[in-house]
Image (cartoon, rainbow, N blue to C red; front, side):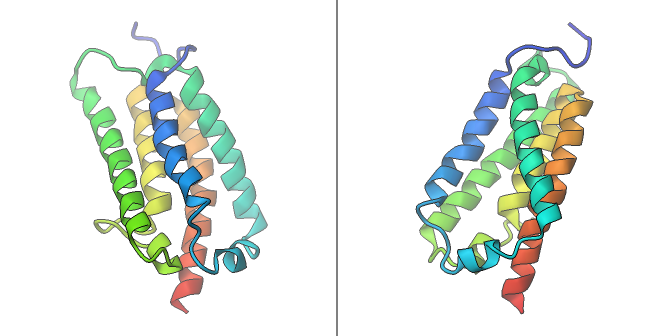
Length: 161
């Protein structure tokens, strides 16, 4: 099947969402000290982009089968790169949970990737969109990225001051 944007369940999308949500659920029990002081001042426009992007990315990555495994081609490297970024995202969380769990730890970089907790999953889903040749997911990821990365960068900049 060579057509693009095929409706159907994506088990790869489900795996990505599990990899994304499990650490975030655990995180709710281990918030960095003072997090509430930063979150209450979040830019409402960025927050709207983030929330909209979260819902859209979650839905789209599940309802298109374009992201499922296919026979190996050079194009498969997009999926490998995407999955590698998700593994790095898990490494970020392991490092955070083993740290003192400060705001600085939460907004830290990993292997040169700034605000890794926000940037890595956004980049992973963007590469997943490329792998699936799915423009809809690509647009949804950009919406998510503007809000999610924007909020994290703003928080990191507040910490640095």
